[in-house]
Image (cartoon, rainbow, N blue to C red):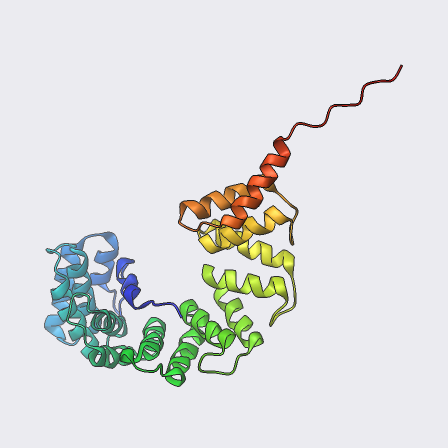
Length: 297
């Protein structure tokens, strides 16, 4: 199982989520944020808080400003205080942000019990559910709580979280915490692949190529590997290079195999057997053709 807890705050590096609990009137604070007028955004958010100190959207927005240093000096610890207030006021995104921080120990002290409480406050926030699943597998260093993990992953996957769908697929594929079920694994891998999850594309392509849990379709497997390789997945680059070098499921193409192998190697995946195969093919192509027999008189 992938260790994703260190990446729990990745969403915080993306643009701010849509304002929560937006009132019927125009959301002037969020509108100013979107225009890049961060001072005005904070001013409008503070006006809303003067009228309603438990305005989750306004609290979350100010937390975001402190997190990114937009219109105010950057202060991640201060941002977490705003997110906690927003979460306590019912803000789902803020609950996820604060819970993820408590889980990883980034910006606030690590506290797994506090993390779980706030991730649960996020209710049906897909990323929060996925993190709860990962935390259930980690289980504070004890035996994984597979039942809880699978429950969280399934809920998140049904809400289109591709990481959760991938995690669920791996459990069914390996039979960890659940009876091994290749068809069920393929089902969730397909769902994650369709959402653009490159690691899922690789796993599903391998199952398709071998006809395990799904109808064999080598042409589609190659297409999936090519998509994942183009997106930068180094395992896909390596597997695609192997297929191209050997002409399996696709027409043999030495130069393209060399290209994908070089990209995988540059990213740190070295495949000695593939290197040897490509080197032998290169040497054979460069070997001079035998001289034509002399004409007889």
